Length: 218
Image 1: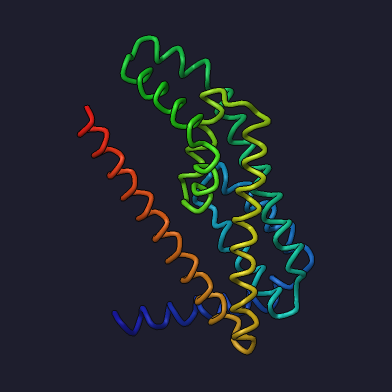
Image 2: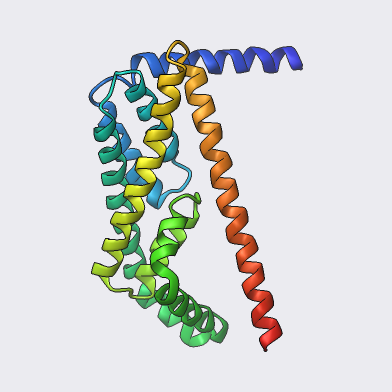
Protein backbone atom coordinates (compact mmCIF):
# COMPACT_ATOMS: atom_id res chain seq x y z
CA UNK A 1 0.00 0.00 0.00
CA UNK A 2 2.72 2.59 0.85
CA UNK A 3 4.43 1.82 -2.48
CA UNK A 4 1.18 2.37 -4.38
CA UNK A 5 0.53 5.61 -2.54
CA UNK A 6 4.07 6.84 -3.22
CA UNK A 7 3.68 6.03 -6.90
CA UNK A 8 0.35 7.87 -7.09
CA UNK A 9 1.82 10.87 -5.25
CA UNK A 10 4.79 10.93 -7.58
CA UNK A 11 2.49 10.86 -10.59
CA UNK A 12 0.39 13.67 -9.18
CA UNK A 13 3.47 15.80 -8.51
CA UNK A 14 4.70 15.17 -12.02
CA UNK A 15 1.38 16.26 -13.51
CA UNK A 16 1.39 19.35 -11.30
CA UNK A 17 4.89 20.26 -12.48
CA UNK A 18 3.74 19.94 -16.06
CA UNK A 19 0.74 22.13 -15.35
CA UNK A 20 2.88 24.84 -13.77
CA UNK A 21 5.43 24.75 -16.56
CA UNK A 22 3.18 24.47 -19.60
CA UNK A 23 -0.13 26.11 -18.65
CA UNK A 24 0.17 28.74 -15.93
CA UNK A 25 2.45 30.91 -18.06
CA UNK A 26 0.01 31.10 -20.97
CA UNK A 27 -1.90 34.36 -21.48
CA UNK A 28 -5.24 32.53 -21.39
CA UNK A 29 -4.51 31.22 -17.91
CA UNK A 30 -5.76 34.63 -16.75
CA UNK A 31 -9.13 33.75 -18.27
CA UNK A 32 -9.04 30.45 -16.39
CA UNK A 33 -8.47 32.38 -13.14
CA UNK A 34 -11.48 34.63 -13.85
CA UNK A 35 -13.80 31.72 -14.65
CA UNK A 36 -12.75 29.55 -11.69
CA UNK A 37 -12.93 32.47 -9.24
CA UNK A 38 -16.45 33.21 -10.51
CA UNK A 39 -17.59 29.60 -10.20
CA UNK A 40 -16.06 29.20 -6.74
CA UNK A 41 -18.29 31.97 -5.38
CA UNK A 42 -21.36 29.91 -6.28
CA UNK A 43 -20.02 26.33 -6.14
CA UNK A 44 -17.45 26.36 -3.29
CA UNK A 45 -15.76 23.11 -4.34
CA UNK A 46 -14.04 24.89 -7.25
CA UNK A 47 -10.40 25.71 -6.22
CA UNK A 48 -10.19 29.45 -6.96
CA UNK A 49 -7.55 30.24 -4.34
CA UNK A 50 -5.36 27.44 -5.68
CA UNK A 51 -5.63 28.85 -9.19
CA UNK A 52 -4.72 32.37 -8.10
CA UNK A 53 -1.75 31.02 -6.14
CA UNK A 54 -0.58 29.12 -9.25
CA UNK A 55 -0.88 32.36 -11.21
CA UNK A 56 1.15 34.10 -8.52
CA UNK A 57 3.86 31.45 -8.72
CA UNK A 58 3.99 31.98 -12.49
CA UNK A 59 4.32 35.72 -11.89
CA UNK A 60 7.19 35.09 -9.48
CA UNK A 61 8.87 33.08 -12.20
CA UNK A 62 8.43 35.94 -14.67
CA UNK A 63 5.82 34.07 -16.74
CA UNK A 64 2.82 36.22 -15.77
CA UNK A 65 2.16 39.80 -14.76
CA UNK A 66 1.38 39.89 -11.03
CA UNK A 67 -1.06 42.80 -11.32
CA UNK A 68 -2.98 41.00 -14.06
CA UNK A 69 -3.17 37.86 -11.93
CA UNK A 70 -4.57 39.90 -9.03
CA UNK A 71 -7.02 41.66 -11.34
CA UNK A 72 -8.19 38.35 -12.86
CA UNK A 73 -8.81 36.81 -9.44
CA UNK A 74 -10.58 39.92 -8.13
CA UNK A 75 -12.79 40.36 -11.21
CA UNK A 76 -13.85 36.72 -11.22
CA UNK A 77 -14.58 36.74 -7.50
CA UNK A 78 -16.51 40.02 -7.77
CA UNK A 79 -18.71 38.66 -10.56
CA UNK A 80 -19.23 35.40 -8.68
CA UNK A 81 -20.17 37.08 -5.40
CA UNK A 82 -22.70 39.26 -7.19
CA UNK A 83 -24.12 36.20 -8.94
CA UNK A 84 -24.51 34.52 -5.53
CA UNK A 85 -26.25 37.68 -4.27
CA UNK A 86 -28.70 37.55 -7.20
CA UNK A 87 -29.41 33.87 -6.53
CA UNK A 88 -30.20 34.75 -2.92
CA UNK A 89 -32.43 37.62 -4.01
CA UNK A 90 -34.35 35.29 -6.32
CA UNK A 91 -34.90 32.89 -3.42
CA UNK A 92 -36.27 35.57 -1.09
CA UNK A 93 -39.94 35.07 -1.99
CA UNK A 94 -39.77 31.30 -1.65
CA UNK A 95 -37.91 31.50 1.68
CA UNK A 96 -40.31 34.14 3.05
CA UNK A 97 -43.22 31.89 2.13
CA UNK A 98 -41.68 29.01 4.06
CA UNK A 99 -40.85 31.29 6.99
CA UNK A 100 -44.53 32.19 7.36
CA UNK A 101 -45.20 28.60 8.35
CA UNK A 102 -41.98 28.03 10.29
CA UNK A 103 -41.35 30.52 13.12
CA UNK A 104 -37.88 29.06 13.73
CA UNK A 105 -36.88 29.87 10.15
CA UNK A 106 -38.26 33.40 10.49
CA UNK A 107 -36.25 33.83 13.69
CA UNK A 108 -33.04 32.70 11.96
CA UNK A 109 -33.69 35.05 9.05
CA UNK A 110 -34.28 37.98 11.39
CA UNK A 111 -31.10 37.24 13.32
CA UNK A 112 -29.12 36.88 10.10
CA UNK A 113 -30.46 40.23 8.88
CA UNK A 114 -29.41 41.99 12.08
CA UNK A 115 -25.99 40.32 12.12
CA UNK A 116 -25.25 41.23 8.50
CA UNK A 117 -26.36 44.82 8.99
CA UNK A 118 -24.25 45.16 12.14
CA UNK A 119 -21.08 43.37 10.99
CA UNK A 120 -21.71 42.48 7.35
CA UNK A 121 -18.87 44.48 5.83
CA UNK A 122 -16.13 42.82 7.86
CA UNK A 123 -17.89 39.48 7.56
CA UNK A 124 -17.70 39.71 3.77
CA UNK A 125 -13.96 40.31 4.01
CA UNK A 126 -13.21 37.47 6.43
CA UNK A 127 -15.64 35.04 4.75
CA UNK A 128 -13.63 35.40 1.52
CA UNK A 129 -10.95 33.23 3.16
CA UNK A 130 -13.39 30.53 4.30
CA UNK A 131 -14.43 28.04 1.56
CA UNK A 132 -18.19 27.73 1.62
CA UNK A 133 -18.49 30.57 4.11
CA UNK A 134 -18.34 33.24 1.44
CA UNK A 135 -21.04 31.51 -0.62
CA UNK A 136 -23.38 31.19 2.35
CA UNK A 137 -22.86 34.82 3.32
CA UNK A 138 -23.22 36.32 -0.15
CA UNK A 139 -26.41 34.35 -0.81
CA UNK A 140 -27.69 35.39 2.63
CA UNK A 141 -27.08 39.03 1.73
CA UNK A 142 -29.38 38.58 -1.24
CA UNK A 143 -32.00 36.68 0.74
CA UNK A 144 -32.11 39.34 3.47
CA UNK A 145 -32.29 42.17 0.91
CA UNK A 146 -29.09 43.97 1.86
CA UNK A 147 -28.54 47.19 -0.18
CA UNK A 148 -26.93 46.30 -3.49
CA UNK A 149 -24.50 49.24 -3.52
CA UNK A 150 -23.41 48.50 0.05
CA UNK A 151 -22.87 44.85 -0.87
CA UNK A 152 -20.92 45.63 -4.04
CA UNK A 153 -18.69 48.13 -2.25
CA UNK A 154 -17.66 45.68 0.45
CA UNK A 155 -17.20 42.89 -2.09
CA UNK A 156 -14.73 45.09 -3.98
CA UNK A 157 -12.71 45.43 -0.78
CA UNK A 158 -12.97 41.71 0.03
CA UNK A 159 -11.99 40.34 -3.38
CA UNK A 160 -9.12 42.81 -3.77
CA UNK A 161 -7.61 41.77 -0.43
CA UNK A 162 -8.17 38.07 -1.19
CA UNK A 163 -6.74 38.12 -4.71
CA UNK A 164 -3.75 40.23 -3.67
CA UNK A 165 -2.97 37.97 -0.72
CA UNK A 166 -3.18 34.76 -2.79
CA UNK A 167 -1.24 36.06 -5.80
CA UNK A 168 1.49 37.78 -3.79
CA UNK A 169 1.94 34.68 -1.64
CA UNK A 170 2.41 32.57 -4.76
CA UNK A 171 4.76 35.16 -6.27
CA UNK A 172 6.99 35.25 -3.19
CA UNK A 173 7.49 31.50 -3.18
CA UNK A 174 7.75 31.43 -6.97
CA UNK A 175 10.76 33.74 -6.76
CA UNK A 176 12.21 31.93 -3.76
CA UNK A 177 12.00 28.48 -5.37
CA UNK A 178 12.40 29.47 -9.01
CA UNK A 179 14.17 26.19 -9.80
CA UNK A 180 11.31 24.05 -8.45
CA UNK A 181 7.82 25.05 -9.56
CA UNK A 182 6.07 22.29 -7.68
CA UNK A 183 7.76 23.05 -4.36
CA UNK A 184 6.94 26.75 -4.76
CA UNK A 185 3.26 25.96 -5.24
CA UNK A 186 3.06 23.39 -2.45
CA UNK A 187 4.65 25.71 0.12
CA UNK A 188 2.53 28.67 -0.98
CA UNK A 189 -0.64 26.56 -0.87
CA UNK A 190 0.28 25.09 2.52
CA UNK A 191 0.93 28.57 3.92
CA UNK A 192 -2.40 29.85 2.60
CA UNK A 193 -4.20 26.83 4.06
CA UNK A 194 -2.57 27.36 7.46
CA UNK A 195 -3.56 31.04 7.48
CA UNK A 196 -7.13 30.15 6.53
CA UNK A 197 -7.30 27.61 9.36
CA UNK A 198 -6.05 30.24 11.83
CA UNK A 199 -8.69 32.71 10.61
CA UNK A 200 -11.43 30.10 11.03
CA UNK A 201 -10.22 29.10 14.53
CA UNK A 202 -10.11 32.74 15.65
CA UNK A 203 -13.57 33.34 14.19
CA UNK A 204 -14.93 30.25 15.96
CA UNK A 205 -13.40 31.21 19.30
CA UNK A 206 -14.72 34.76 19.05
CA UNK A 207 -18.17 33.40 18.21
CA UNK A 208 -18.12 31.12 21.25
CA UNK A 209 -16.97 33.99 23.47
CA UNK A 210 -19.76 36.23 22.16
CA UNK A 211 -22.31 33.46 22.73
CA UNK A 212 -21.05 32.96 26.30
CA UNK A 213 -21.33 36.68 27.04
CA UNK A 214 -24.84 36.72 25.60
CA UNK A 215 -25.86 33.72 27.72
CA UNK A 216 -24.35 35.26 30.85
CA UNK A 217 -26.08 38.55 30.15
CA UNK A 218 -29.41 36.81 29.60
